[in-house]
Image 1 (cartoon, rainbow, N blue to C red):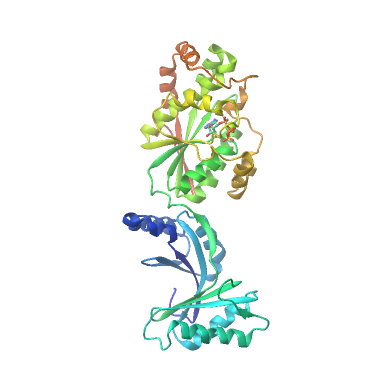
Image 2 (spheres, rainbow, N blue to C red; image 1 turned 90 degrees about the horizontal axis):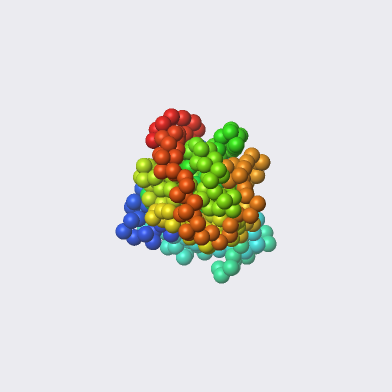
Length: 401
Ligand code: ATP
Ligand code: MG
């Protein structure tokens, strides 16, 4: 497919921050390549790597889709839409001029990087030649080496050279799978999908867990969580979504607890179940969408009392963000419109009038003595089922756990 042609568009990815990971660099680059290969599996592409960068060759009709995938792949900080040309002066100069004609700029700079030492001109000398060709052919522009509107970079290598302009920002982060697994508490709200996205950005592979309280909550609420998971799959290869039937525990809590403490106790139960599910699924952390001060269960006192039931680290990626900042990310990753659909989840169907803001540990412990929660939790785990959500198919494994 991608043979010797006069000019071909390619995507050029420089590893950037990944290259600061000295000892681990090969591991990070390998993961990034695997992740890209997986996402690009339905396209005719060729990925070429060298020590500090990667080139993706593709069919021009797929450019938009390929760029979207590059934008959504963590571990890529920026990329260039580059043009690959045969290494000879005439081709390079013609193509550079064609590219420049299409751009809108007043000031420019040319950078030449010559690694093919058989090329007849030195870098600086050739940059001047190319600059003068542009100046001669395009009106009302000038060179500015300090603060140009556009930089044309010409990399001269044996056989093929690359011409490209300013970089395009991508998602950054580390490739998903460079960290161990985390269990994401995924409700139908705005915050938890954003938390999942940010966790994956640090390279964490996530499984999602949804607590449902049928028939108090609806199948639509579950479908909403499935749809949110599908959005998150844009950033990874697949997500296992564990659905925990939580009705009986919730009903026991509401039968036995002071209403003000129901949410606190309910969340302590969720954390207990999360810990066991994490152990079962070889995950090392719990991730959720708690944001400090947002609701009664997210004051520092509440978090402390709730968190005390587990020794597992709990990561709260949106803990210090404002709601508006979280909403901006939700819009960017396209989960916002799903999150605002009005189906209630198990936290909203039983909301007490005055949930306690500063819960006491001894009150929680005393209340919990009235519920034989160990057996209820075990039953919950037995009845939990898992849906594997991949980029293009949905499989359901009953009692996989
Ligand atoms: P969100 O917008 O993500 O629903 P929230 O502001 O509504 O969050 P809470 O309902 O207090 O806050 O929940 C805090 C976090 O607990 C959620 O972000 C989510 O990670 C987790 N959580 C809440 N309800 C559920 C649920 N039914 N299933 C799984 N996780 C849940
Ligand atoms: Mg919620």
